[in-house]
Length: 319
Ligand code: SF4
Ligand code: SF4
Image (tube, rainbow, N blue to C red; front, side):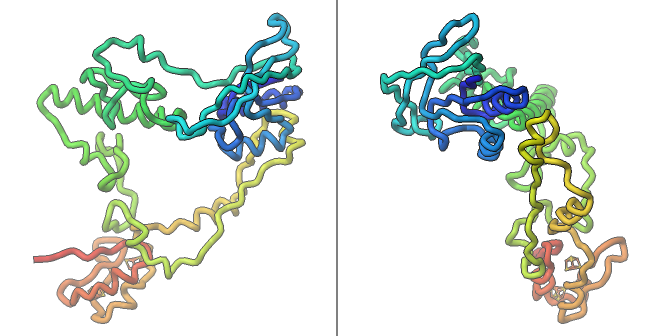
C-alpha cells in the first residue's frame, strides 16, 4: 500500500492500513524535516512498521483498475517557499515502486477564485479581521478557508470567534455596540462566550488579577516536579486493533499531575504573607476565604506581595 502525503491524515491512513494487515510506504515529496505531520505521530508510525519514501512524488499509476505499482519522480529540495519549508524540485529522474493500492492523503486546496469579487482573498485564503469578518461586512469566514493552521481545534476556535462577532455585529445594528475587551480574559487573552453571556463563574479563590504572569509569582516556594510520563501500549498490541495507543493514566498519576498546578492567582491560605509581614498587618478575610492586609496598619512595604508564591496579592496605588 502506498500512501501519498506527509501530513497527519497520511500518517492516519498509513497506521490504519497497518492495523488492517497491509505493508505500507508513505510517499512524500519533501524530506522528513519538512513533514507537516506531528513528530510523535511519525515516530509511532515507524514503530508500527510504516516505511517512508522521502523526496518522491507519484507520476503514473500502473494498471488503474487493480494497481500494480507507481512510477515516482525523485525530488530535490530547493529554496524555502511561503510555507517556510524547502520547496520540492523535480529532478526528472523516475523509478517504480510496487504496490497493490494507493491512498491519496494530500491537503485539499480552497477554491477562493470562485468566490464573489467583493470577498477579498490572498494567497488562497479569504482575508478576514481577527474575528473572522470578511471584506463584505455581513459575511464571516472560518476554518480552512482563512489563514489559520488547518486543525480541528483552530477551526472550532475560528467558529467561536465568528459567532461572537456575528452577535456583536447584530447588536451594533441595533445600536448597542459593546467592546470586545469585556469578553476577554486579560489584555491579550482569549475571548470567552461564557463572559459574553454572563455565565462564567470566577472559580479562583480570592483572585487579585485575572491573568497571572510567571513574573507575578515567587517560584522559590515550588519544587521542580517532572511532568507525567506518557505511556504507550506495546507496538505488537497496537497492531492487533484500534484500541487507544496512549492508555488513560492511573488515578495516582492523575492526582500527582494535578498537584503540579501552581494555583496561580489563587490564595491557598499558605500563610506566607501572614508570617512575613513585619507590621502584623495581615489577617484572615472575615468575608470568606483567604488573607487580606489591614490597611490601618499596612506600611506598603510590598513584602507580602513578594512572598506570595502564586501571585494572589498585588500592590495598588491608593489616594
Ligand atoms: S505591604 Fe508590607 S506592611 Fe503591608 S501587609 Fe504587606 S507585608 Fe504587611
Ligand atoms: S501568601 Fe498568597 S497564597 Fe499564601 S496566604 Fe498569603 S495571599 Fe494566600
